[in-house]
Length: 304
Image 1 (cartoon, rainbow, N blue to C red):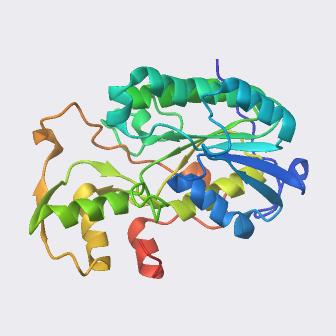
Image 2 (cartoon, rainbow, N blue to C red):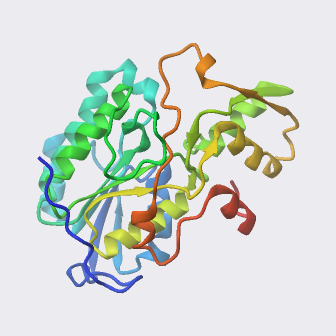
Image 3 (spheres, rainbow, N blue to C red):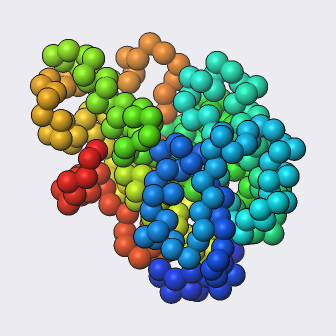
């Protein structure tokens, strides 16, 4: 059962809620991942009041629940941002037991430990089946694959606590530590290997967002102690082909023609064709609106 969502405390934009005054330690799980790493990098700018504890597998294994409990009792963080997950759809399908343990059971444990403190959980636009598009937080969910199912199950556990926050996001871009985590890194590598031409879908839509913007939004929501469910994604609905066309000028070493294709001709399992988001709810809480991909590219020279 989902708890009744509480409004964000009326802290001024950019200010930290009185319950999270410094020094407040925040755990960030999955700190080596794309969004986790951007949260760590942007904390000094967007959340200087926090002391960040960047957790990776070198610290302890999140699947060792006893070790997690001991670390929580020892360190007593004042907030947790939970980024660690199995996020590749194919990986979840290949090992469903592990996907459920990582994505659901680990989230449930951390949410239980964080019962009295703010807890932020990252979910996905793939909790929707993609038949409608422009999804708001109140729209009905219907994941097509196991990955989305695990994220939805975790969401429901997290939202049972009125203190806790679920952030659904779309594909995120940027520079990851591994060089393989962001949508732009994956697309660039695919283009480099494709030769003179590539076919991309014109009828599959997402709302891409730089991970730095996702991190900013999360720091602001946490700072205001917002709770409940928020969609955090780019302000622009783009097809796979449109995303590539926007990024290709950034990569002059890649010379190719991008052909138009249809996801309906894809021979694999069903695809969620339009998981674009209505982000009007979160935009009202932020000090600056989340940009669309083309807007962001036009105003920055950051590596992407």
